[in-house]
Each structure stands twice: as C-alpha cells, then as structure tokens.
Image (cartoon, rainbow, N blue to C red):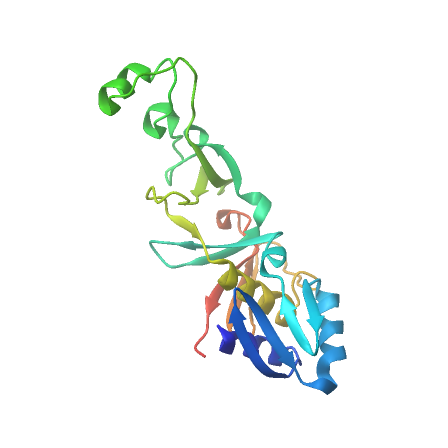
Length: 221
C-alpha cells in the first residue's frame, strides 16, 4: 500500500521521503515540497492534517462522497457516488434479468409469506412485517431494471465494498492524477480511458453502466 501511495503522490508532483500505513496513511514530505503538496491536496478537496512535515490522510472522511465496489464473480471494480447505494427492501430489487425479487424470494416476513417461512425456519411470526434490508444501486440499463446489491452480510450477492484504505488509494489517484471530478468531459454515449499512477479509469455514459463514474483497472506496478 505504501508503494502505491508513493507512486500516486509523486505523479502528482508531491515528493515523499517516507510513507507509513498504520490505520491511516502518514506521508513524510520533502521539506521544500510541503507547501506545494498542501496546495494540491486542498485544491483537490483531500482531507488531511499536516504535522511536523508529515501529511496524515483521514481515510474515513475522504471516502464519504464516493464508494469503490468489486464484483466478486468478475473482479471488475466500479466507482460511483456513495449515495447511489441506498438501503432498501430486497424484495423491491431486480435480478440480472430484470425480474423483481418479491417477498418470498427475499425471505421477508409478511402475511403472505409467514406460513411458508414458519415451516422452513421453525420460527413463529409475530404479526409484524419485516422486510429483508440490503444496500443496492438500482438502475435502468436501457432494457430492464437491475440492482447491484452489496454483499454486506456474506449472503452471496455479487458486489462487495473494498476496504477503506483500498478505496482511498483509488480515489486519490483518480482525483489527483486524472483530473476528476473537475475537468473530465466525455461526449454523449462515448467513453474515455485515462491512466493514473497506479490505476486506469474508463469514463462512460452508457446506460448499462449503472451511472458509475468510472471503472478502475489496476496497472502493473
């Protein structure tokens, strides 16, 4: 991780002496480079603290706006606004064929499903509706509604949120070295690939891409 951060910062013109990762990233900046580094980070909106020549990145704050997720079947990565993944009822989500889950398939406790669930689970319904909750990004792909569901509880859904440090590195490379989100312009229906220091980003506006801003592809270090 330290090597990736070093490459990302140096491509942005921020020279480092030493980098340490212990829950947060600590980057020791060359003395003559510290003001330039602070200027670049502030312009990009990166949250950090400067202390005795060291830049301490606040990982949690820096990933509040965006989220990076991975498809567990294909290893594809996707970056989008965190607000696109909302907590919702699984029964209202759609599968890859555009078919809505429904309460039976989602395991929701309702008047219609209670009798069957009592048989399969051995539990007694208390009379209160209880819908299975998930975090999902639901979108129209041009032909059908689809939902990308996060596998928060190891229930076998396709998508998982990356660790916070991994998300931070991808976002930092995207923002510092690829002009995002300030100056990227893509003609309607087109796509453009831009390489950062560690990751390559494909910007797309196709409906099938679920509104994702870009798809990072890790490059060889």
